[in-house]
Image (cartoon, rainbow over all chains, first blue to last red; front, side, top):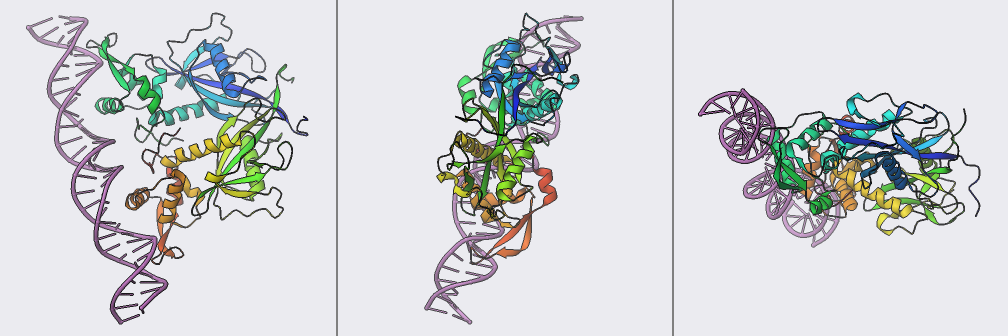
Length: 234
Length: 234
DNA sequence: AACTTTAAATGTCAAATTTACAATTATTTT
DNA sequence: AAAATAATTGTAAATTTGACATTTAAAGTT
């Protein structure tokens, strides 16, 4: 079979916007780019799509390469295709955003990428259009987390309601009423109270909760309204 | 400047899932593909991204080429990148879905593409992964229309509330209570009642409404909840 | 002119949800 | 034993939703 004639072929890359939560702030995992152009500059983790891969595979491979993690929550954000977004050569990038439990992350021994967590609000200047990607990813995160139980992906298996609230407050840069928040979250039926308490933060200690895996799967795409009127989001 | 070495370059296309509404059913605009492979088979309208174009431009150009319309509502759905989705040669496709007022559509004189509207429920077999694209577009349409004032893009400037309801019922393949529906829609404050009535459908006639353009722009991304519990959508 | 027909427009009440707001409790430290 | 701290829980008013039937405007018919 022949090929399509007279058409431009281009590189296709994936770039990952990797979010984490350290208990206080929303973080972004960035690397120092290891090759030209823009070598040594801060960048999203990315890579070219290989001959035998589809996009999800490329994104998962890229994420695993950096974090060592597999089975991480990830979804396609959008494709970025401005003709000159990469000055070297035309490269389409399909952006994926990922949510990981920051505690699961172990920096690769081989320090191959000089990766570093940055507070989202205080990230360095990024190469190409990566800042735009991060911006869109943040908007998407806010959008989806307002109506779906997404942010649990950023927490460890066991977490407390106050921890969850701090996370929501970090994502929306806003304060929520404790009573209403916990009622809302508990009313989803997704949480299972544990017998143990988290004792580091307070004298009284807060009960741990875990996700009810069955219900979590079942209701992941349901409209749960965690945040009312989450601003003017896309 | 040199190029990235040892990487696969590939074709990048855009494909448009074009929805219309004829007053009764949700429709899909398809073309008979004009070149090999799969020449003569039903297909989404698409085209290769050109050297100087970004993705939005390519999608808009493609849509205009088929419909003659400009300024149409369009948003990126997702990128499809399975290695063998096009048997001829590896081609990444970025899918866009568009909503057009079916009455605005005039088939191009040059009949270049043999385009045809199909009821969404009764569309023919499509080439490559286009059926999957349509399926995802429909899911996205249902998702977004449940919470944002999106479906107005499918209607003419003047429309009646019963017409709007029929549209919602077509999109969700469900019936809604007239009283609750009109209350919900009117409570958004987006509609301006006109003096004239639509007189073709009923003896009494239904008042026309228009969108309040200011409020429509302002609230387009707001969470308006047109449909409660719109099923288990993504 | 009165009556019939058809679809549009509108109202109400109960239930559920949301919002605003403060007191109590478990535990550690002093 | 008292103080301090953060977790947990309650309630009443307001708003929104859901279920349900009647009235109304206009055209057609007798």
